[in-house]
Image (cartoon, rainbow, N blue to C red; front, side):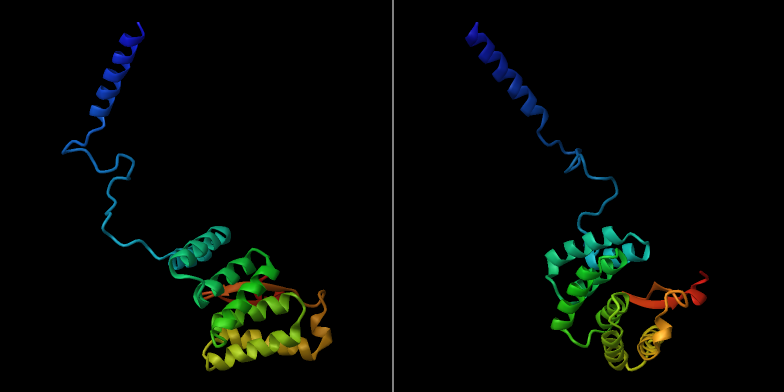
Length: 191
């Protein structure tokens, strides 16, 4: 009976394998979604991350940036983008670390400078934030109104201790452009 059982199992296995053979009209992958062009190039992870940031999906954006880093390495764009995502997630220590790493690679990269200034403002290091915003403003040639506004706020807060009174003014971060943040006061953001 054991020999008959072995022959039966072998015959069933052969039939099962025959059913797995490719047929001319079968798709290459039965699990692939219909209508996907496999020859088309995939969207860059950095672009996907930026889109997710605009949509308010900061954790997903962070994951997309990490996937992009696998393809292109931790360059200044990736580090700055990761820092921006961490900033939006409230991970100020991680954001500062990533943004400083970006600055090590390119000390003139304006989005990283601006976002580092925002982190410094949020952590109470106003004087250093003012210097970082000043560098961002200089490297941007004064083109960005958001950076100009951030610099003005940092200087005002540094020079006037009453300006730092939490009862007098609260700040909110607002994304402007690709990875830039603007600090808005309560009077400006409708709060």
